[in-house]
Image (cartoon, rainbow, N blue to C red; front, side, top):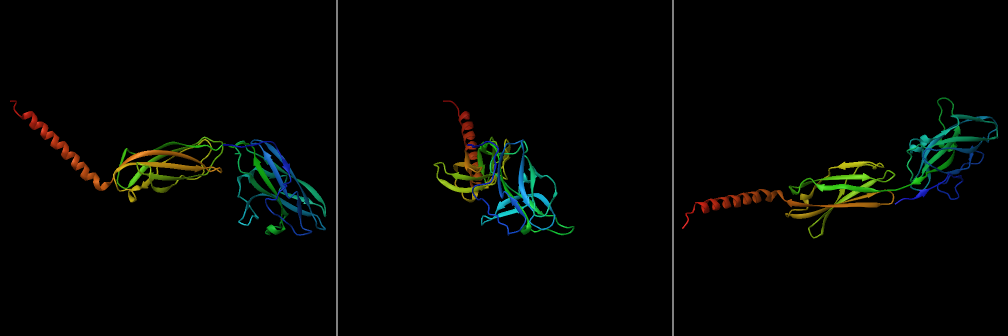
Length: 297
């Protein structure tokens, strides 16, 4: 399943995703919000207008921060929040603006060739009064223009279970080992979660257990896992059982499934069963020997 973004668009957002406000007569930046749709491997220029409201010439520092929303929907800015921060470069680390003048400031956007389409990146184009040596500038006196950066391309999420089987045809004891191989045949990396369902031969659900799959599965990657489950805690009778793996992946919540079957012999009955089988074999051998020694009439 996929969707397609096309074109290069730079515009002020018509709807508010974040809410940003500044006190009157403070450092200002416009537009307050941008939207840029760009293809991997391309470069673009963003221009913002920065106004110095003070009665004297001032120097201002330029930077790029990541942005996320908090629980109330307000923006939270910080460095190191998004790898896309490295894709933007201001025209200079520090600029100078004359008293009560406005200056156009450029930010170069360079999208790497391996950038993945999908969820947008939210970034802050930050402008702040240049701090004196040893001093710091708080967020309250900074100005920020919010950028919504959307990487264009076809987004296809496709994770498949290449292998799902038990380590043996018959299992004894309480620990059941399995082999799981996942493949991401899609175009983007995806988060993955999973669970295992244990069922009787008739399909009746006996137990659900979480399946630990690790972090995001990269596009084109294959991952091999060897999960083990303490099935002896809830399965005690010998017999044939079905074990199903379910892997949920991506922002669309799609699911991959695979099932395998195992014979289970509880450890408590393995020894008696072996003794009985050996006894039957020994009895059959002795019977055949006696039969062969019996004289013909």
